[in-house]
Image (cartoon, rainbow, N blue to C red; front, side):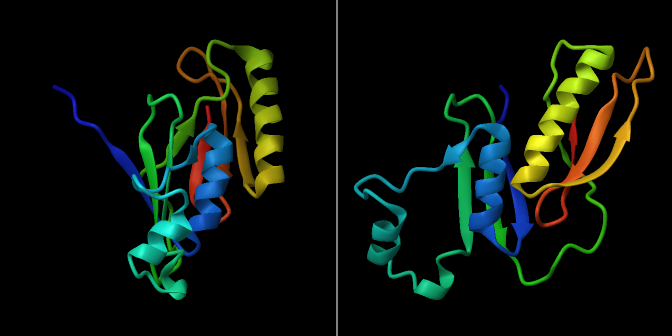
Length: 145
């Protein structure tokens, strides 16, 4: 039996980072708990003070296939390279220049959303089809693969 996973990001601004990753992956903000029509209504009912309303945020795959992404506020900033990162599969099934052109187009879209481009790795057959390394708005590295 397999286990369900959640990917958790420590960050400074959970609402902004969850909105970025929702756009990157085609995810959506997780619905509020049953019985509430909005997160504000749920947080009001739970007595969460205004200053703690951006302590956490979650996004989910609308098709239910991918893992939930959870963003939690932490006091410290990012200090080193990620030991684990996401590979966003932006050109499945494509090879050569067609693949790299698709990755470049997606990189441009993500930079417009707030990502920072780091470097491009050219295809090196037979093991590497090429990829582009980016950073999200809080500096977390990820690859367009």
